[in-house]
Image (tube, rainbow, N blue to C red; front, side, top):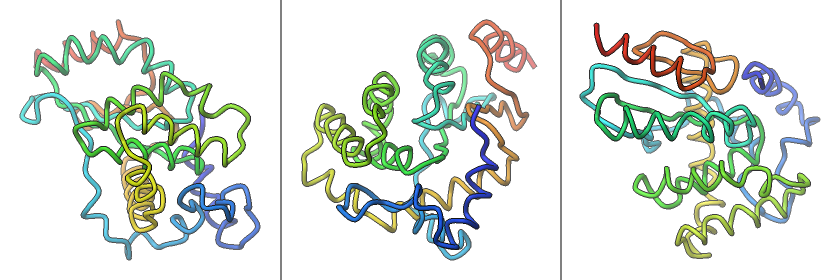
Length: 221
């Protein structure tokens, strides 16, 4: 699993100007992760960052998932666990489900920007496509190609080029998303993805059988 602490530690290097891996190339493919991370979270207005949620907000059990769109373990959870979790616990109103994005790299940030470009209504549908095609849109690691691949995903979901241009060049939103990620991850002590909190208790990645057993126990309390 990828470690949250790695990207937070890299912040010092980014501020020193030597971590070019995090810098967006000059062709404007997407928001600059280095600039977003360089801003002190306390000075960034995060009030406009919506908490992405599904299910029943008044449910007795709340599940929070921390995940990255570029994390293979997160894709595995999406492919093999999330569908059953959604059908049996989220769609039935048994739980309140909150999804929180984690950014290990600029590609994950760009993916989050595209997913949010369609608003809360389209967010999880676009997220499904991003996870389903993770190996395709990240292939090669070329920033310009990755950005173009994400734009194609957005257009598949019904977004226009103009909408995507606005979303991918919204520096203030990028800073707010990264600041929110840093604040939440540090507050909850998240150090890997996917990570889960069920009614405030931390859990690592698990299969559906174990997740279902845990939720049933919580619901019975």
